[in-house]
Amino acid sequence: MRTWISRLPLLLALGMGQPALAEEATYGEMVRTKLASGITNMAFGLAELPKNVINTSNEVNVLLGATGGVLKGTLHTLGRLLAGTLDFITFPVPSQPITHPAYPWQQFGTDTTYGPFFDMSRKLPEERTRLPAAAPRAP
Image (cartoon, rainbow, N blue to C red; front, side):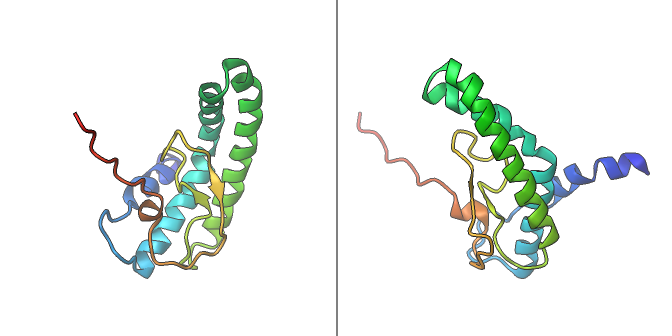
């Protein structure tokens, strides 16, 4: 029984994926997405720490990445934990997850943003944050 409970966040995260090409999400899809986002942000919010150290080091330098990146990563970790908790508590309300990108491992090279808190649009986060396709290069 304990092993099943300890694996619950991973099972929920894997089992509650988003449909790839849906134009408008249903109530069930939005609730599943918000619940999965809340659970994974609570469980894996600590991934913000190395993410911000790496991104800050790449943007500025290694010294600032080791100091400012740790501070920025700590703040984003707390933000993901709190936003995940709020998403988990309010998952029956069919709104978008608070964090953008919705999961810590999506768009690893971009900074995490938060809000709007109860965005009731019917698009799933994957559709909202998808990057535009790159234009083909001329030879």
